[in-house]
Length: 399
Image (cartoon, rainbow, N blue to C red; front, side, top):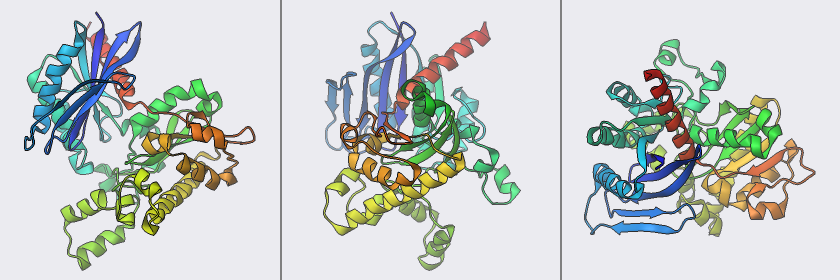
């Protein structure tokens, strides 16, 4: 019998899950999958670690499963998959921990109430992240729930890097630069000593490029600066999020278009970014395959913003030893990696074209003064590790 940990990542229309088993002190992924289309056409799929399918289920058209129904189905399915192994806890990805939680925490009613106060800071993520926690607490109150935050990793940043130039009373309320994708960056920092010891002790910029995109400056594995700030809409243009925007544009939209907060929220989060610029798609694969001028413009703008942010983060670090690509685009789009590295030639970056096409491990040439790597991220494993540590600490404190 092995101890098991379930990891849940709930979004607006899906719940992703992973089941980890503890073997010889390590956590091994046993299955992973998701329930998607929660409010349209629900579909469940689970896969083995090698990607081969293990189970599938579709619900009839018109069925609205919702988050509660999806979680109930997952719990029943995972009880069968456990096959005699002992489930010791559930780890949850939660986007925002504010300044209250700078590390993962076991969730009770008091913690949940605090986390609900951060909904306004992450309106499109936080409510969905918290739904399965509340449901699991109600259905299996004896099973520990651990919240792991995308913001926690960035609390090592200098105070000046977390500030915004607003009056003190607003900063005291929590209007600060938080940074996100922290679980991904933390995982990359954890494996850097194995792949590039110089980068692990030196100065690196990690590019987490996907439908959500950001960049983070690491010094000796600690977050020094990041492109995202108070919310996960700042920084690089993303699939449907606009990225950094002059606040005056918001005032213009209110005054000249008569838009209220919810309409502006929808525009900035779901109608902008690559989709808004191209008018075609939020998917980088579609844009790279398109010959439409607006698709090219969206890609060019994405790369231009990366070029500017890379210079800014290198300046914050005072130099650069390594660049690491991760995330869906970062791991799978050699054209994007090539252009980013060409734009960074002034920093001493030189790419090995053959290695870049392979897209794993080191892709910089021997002549490059900066190491360039492609490293698949593993936020789920990071959450599982945190969950185990929190539960072990809780057990030690209770004895």
